[in-house]
Image (cartoon, rainbow, N blue to C red; front, side, top):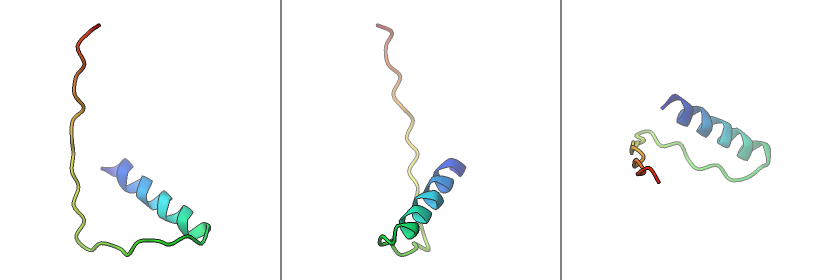
Length: 42
């Protein structure tokens, strides 16, 4: 979760730096965590 939060902070900083639109802050964000599927050995 920390890496996802840091990535979003960096992304928003980059948008602002380039004068691109930044989405409004969501006061109630939701996160979905999904485990990767294991692949069978080939």
